[in-house]
Image 1 (cartoon, rainbow, N blue to C red):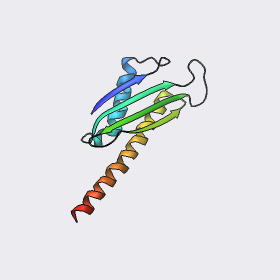
Image 2: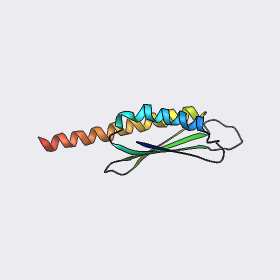
Image 3: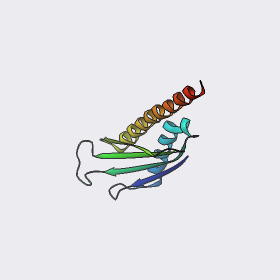
Image 4: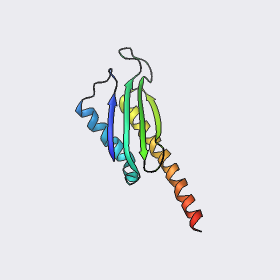
Amino acid sequence: MQIQINSDRNIQGHQEMSSQITGVVESALGRFNAHITRVEVHVSDENGDKTSKNDMRCMMEARLEGRQPVAVTEQAATLDQAVDGAADKLARMLDSILGQQRDQQRERSN
């Protein structure tokens, strides 16, 4: 699973942040490794220098083999919360998609 991290001009995309985000993605989505070819993570600060509630945004897109990409978005007060929330949402979505696919395959084989 390839992980690509992008940030807007308001977030410093330093190595420590990239390593931390990569760890969160691998932890949350590692069990889907056989099905995912790439995960793109886009992090942004919606309000730039101004502070406001839930202005950090994380969008994650997973590219699954043989399927259209799926994406989720999470907004939170901190970047860590946004990344964690998006990873959790994406894991739940992939559980649902791949579970439905397994069910359909079982129905066909019966």
